[in-house]
Every structure is written in C-alpha cells, then in structure tokens.
Image (cartoon, rainbow, N blue to C red; front, side):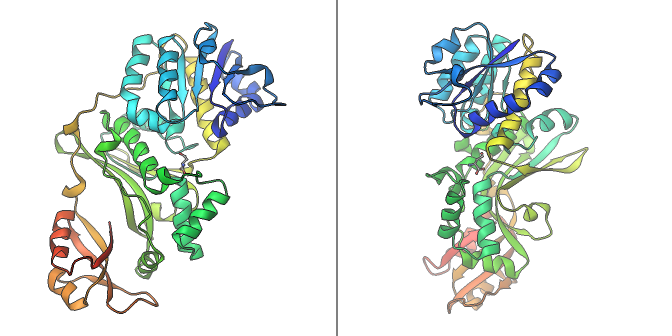
Amino acid sequence: MINVAILGFGVVGSGVAEVLTTNGESINRRVRDEIRLKYILDVRDFPGSPYAGCFVKDFSVIEQDPEVDVGVETIGGATVALDFTRRALQAGKSVVSSNKELVATHGYELLQLAKEKQVSYLFEASVGGGIPILRPLTSCLAANELTEVCGILNGTTNYILTRMIRGGLSFEAALKEAQANGYAERDPSADIEGHDACRKICILAALAFGQHIYPDQVPTEGITGVALADVAYADSCGRKIKLLGRAIRMEGDKVCAYVAPHLLDGEEPLAGVEDVFNAIAVTGNAIGDVMFYGRGAGKLPTASAVVADVIDAAKNIGQRKYLDWGPGAPDITVSPDVLSDRWYVRAQAPVDEVRRRFGEVQLLARPGAPVGETAFLTGEMTLPELDGKLAGLQADSVIRMFH
Ligand code: HSE
C-alpha cells in the first residue's frame, strides 16, 4: 500500500484526488500496488466532500505519520509550500509538485535534500500543465546536446493574445474575458507581466543545461504593452504576436534566457498555438527540432501530470527517482543583449528619419493609423544597436518595440 497526502485542496489538488479516485484501478495495476489517498491538508472545511475522512488541518499529522509515502504539494507560492516540502522530504517522504514558483526559486536546494534522503522530488506539472515535457527532456532527449528551449509557456496570456488577434478585443477586454472563463487569476499580474513564463523557462533551462537559473537572472517582459495597433501591424506582414520564454546555450556553458513578446512569422509552428494551449520547442544536436503541444493549465490536465509523478514516485519508493541539476551562480547567464534579431518598432517619427537612421526597413501599414505613426521591421541587430539607432529620434517617440 502506498499512502498519499495532498497538500492544498484547490483546483489542482482536487483534480489530483479526482484522477486518483476515477482511475484508481488502472493506476494500481501500473504501480502493482494499491495507492491510497490518506490525507488532504487544507485550512478550509469541505462539508459533503466525498473525501470527508481524509481532511486534516495540521501538517505535522502528515509529517509524523510513517505510513505516508508521497506528499502532493499543490499549495503554490514559495512560503508555506517551501516549509512543508522541506519537512516532508526531511521526514523521508517523496514529494510531487505542480508549483513552478517553488521549483524555480528553490529547486536546487530541494533536489539536494531529496538526494540526501533518497526520496523523489518530481514536478512534471510545473511546466506546460498536462504536456509531458520535463521527463522527455531528461529521458527521451538525453542523448542530445540541447541548444535551445523556446515556448509559449502561459495559457492565460496566449488566450488574451488570441482574442486580440482573432476577436479584435482590446487587451483589457480580453483579460476580463479570460478572468470570466476562469483562465486568469483574480490577480493576473504573474501571468500578464510574464513572471509565470519566467519561472517555467528557469525550470526548462535548468533541466536542459544542468544549472539552476533563478528568475532574477531572466529579463522578463509580459504582454501589458501589446496593443491592438501592434496586432494589426503584425497581421499586415503575416506575423502573430506571442509571448515566448527562451533559453539558449551559449559558449562556455553559459545560458541566455529571457521572456518577451515576439512577432512570429505565421508559418512558424509556435505561431499556430492558440487559446490556452502551450507549446515547447526543443532543439538538440541529434534530434534537430521537436515540439511538445497541449493543455498548459486546467484542473484535470495538470492533475494528469501530477498523478503520473505520483505513480513514478510510488514505483521508486526507497530508490530515489533521479532528477537533478547543479547550483546556480550569477555568472552562468549572459544578457539577451548579445542576441541579434529583426525588431518591430512603432514610433511617432517621420519615415525619412527612420530610413536615415536604419537604412532599408520593412514599413508596415494599418487602417486608421494616426498621422506621423511609423511602424517597421528592422534588419538583424542587437538590442544595444537598436537602442543606438532609436536614441536620435525625438524623445518619447518610440511607442513599442518587440522582437
Ligand atoms: N496561470 C498559468 C497559465 C497556469 O495561465 O498558464 C498554469 O501554470
């Protein structure tokens, strides 16, 4: 018998209970043992719940019960969740998590603790929700030198951008719709300002390149600066605006990682990823390009990944399931300023002036553009080079610039 305790009975935690119950028989067959949901930790009461006998409010009940083999941390955040995860691992229990903030900020420390205690710390659901990505990255692609991981890592922002592109909704209206549909949190700042995608690219980079990358090492821009005008200009040149998280292996085992809106060519696979879907493209020296696509959020898709980790942990009781990376350091990362790109610029500036500074540019047009507005795609250049050329334009004349 493998005993499981769910820590936090929110959307994902209740989905885990549902999947464990609904698919119990087939899960037990796979594990060749019985998985029992023994505890659910939550400060709230859930009268009439089918799991009535499982609820506890005090974590130490779980911590001190030697029968508990696996803790499922679906609390979120990096305070209480960190304390409970440390204590569960210390107590010799495996921990499975969907908590990207915790893994991105404390993953190295927690993996070390798991190693010391010979238990598993698994977090497939922390990136891409239900999409299998972390296990394929570390197992199926293990033969490769990975060179880049790039993805649409946040369902809420992808939904908002899709509604702006396809429905002509303003950013504010699309955000309200996302909230009404239950995609965006009531406080959507982690999504729309890019922090959620940042945490996920940190985890992907750590697994792909073997060193902990902390969120404060990753320059992050969300989608709050994307306007319908930019969507229209992008459309005029066959492009779609997408929020990407990118991590690139650089010379000397350095990593360049950032999160920012990009104007993607409509033919690129990531440009076709719409609504709340996520996709992650991985490049390796043997496989070439491979892409993972699916539901990046939601109760049951996320629970699907969590329960798969529970099964893995259950199969490996007493012999830690291996997942690892090295410690972080400030000099591991290099600034994205070194990368060359074609930039999209929208400015209040005369075309002649733009041409004088940039030479040949691809001018863009949109219906109803105000007089004096110029939008264009530059040739390949780095951000400092772009800044240098834009510096001479009248102060405040640059309205937007994206990759
Ligand atoms: N808020 C996240 C998203 C949930 O919209 O993608 C899944 O991590």
